[in-house]
Length: 398
Image (tube, rainbow, N blue to C red; front, top):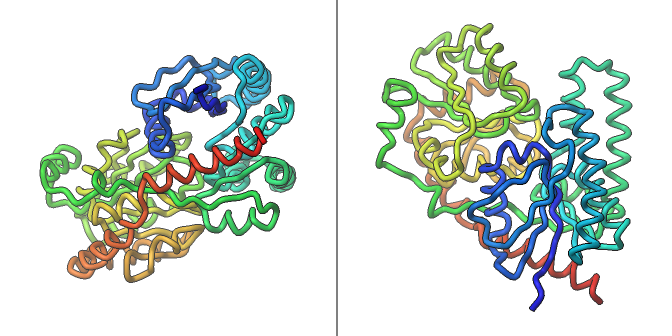
């Protein structure tokens, strides 16, 4: 039987975060097997170690400097050329991108239409919002920010109307995109509750190693360091809390474009001794970090279906998150966690203090949260992805 060949278009930055990229693919595609052959477009000739399916990597020029806008644009243009060649040479039937639908999705669509193949895109965040925040951070005038956002919205609309299928794990995005096309599926993210679970062994030792005092109260943030995640709000909340208590530390598990700016920010605020930037933490070790936390905090400006929330809830850690995107679908405020408005550090600080000052209530909420999150499994999510891809490919063959 011939392999099921698909082309996956990757962001050039993925090759710099290879372990993280592999972890995400293993979760999304755990139902795939040796019958599947993925052709990856990457900025480098990367090697994965534990994917359940076969793969080939095609190097795309200009991928060595993913933070450069010019190199990124050249990479995207080159990806179309390399993708077309790969499809024609290897008889690939499906072009797919698992992230970056606004730019990688456009590349996937163009590549698919040039070769008369099917195209599937996954929407995993609000790329238009991310673009607006990026331009604002770079100091673009407001009128240009608005203009680029209008253009981005038009491109997004073009993609949604012309691709063969869209997958999203965000219920809000499912509703929004569903008004444009009926070729869309909502597939919630899954969590492995056998891995992400309450732990006791090694927790106190890790806490002492990281913060020097096992009696400290630990706030934990897990995620990419970019503007959408709203970390400045959390820093301001920590500053407020530190005025009345000296037992708090904040652990930041993640890396990203804003790390240098955030380090400078907490230094100016006088809380750098309370904030620990841990960098990228391998997914397999995250359960340990969740278990040393007293509160997991997600101050995002927008959030789809959050892995962080699910993993924290599965580990039995109280969650305080912003009332945005899909967060209210995962958290029942006051029952399985707490929701606060975005960009309001005082509200965030008050809710964090409430959780810390009411340990019995926090424990009860965490117990309910773990029971609630058990219904979302990795295998059900991955099986849904597999079924959708097979249906899209089948429609091409017929």
